[in-house]
Length: 143
Figure 1 (cartoon, helix red, strand yellow):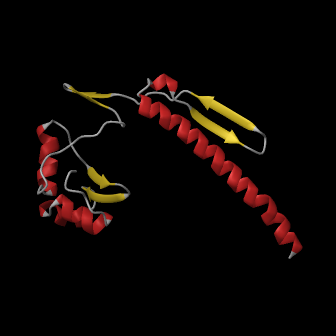
Figure 2: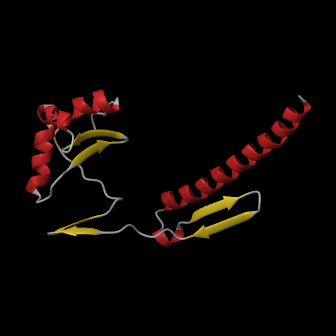
Figure 3: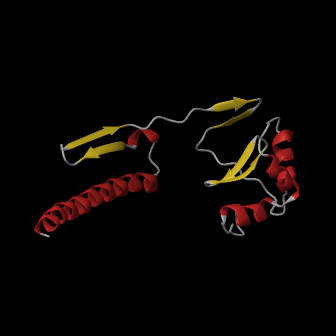
């Protein structure tokens, strides 16, 4: 019993300390976001409190993809208008841009993948309905 208290007595302060360090670093970066500073001002930080070691590095910009006249990165978001769009219509939207879409996901949930035969049933269903049933998410009206 005494051994358990001894171990717990060391773990709880370590958790509180590491949480405080992480929260402080996140708040510092949040100030930069609110000020709208350049990418070079941000920092990725690796901290190890047991050594003690803090290593900071500048984040690198994402790779830019180019196709025809379009450019995008993993940080970009494509806004597709149409609340009542089916999966087939969404795939046609990508085809109209000259792109081939193999899979569609929403968060961790896979909405459509052309490799899965069962997903062919989802082609005529509305994307929002699939998101509600598969991802169990409610999409707000403004999205």
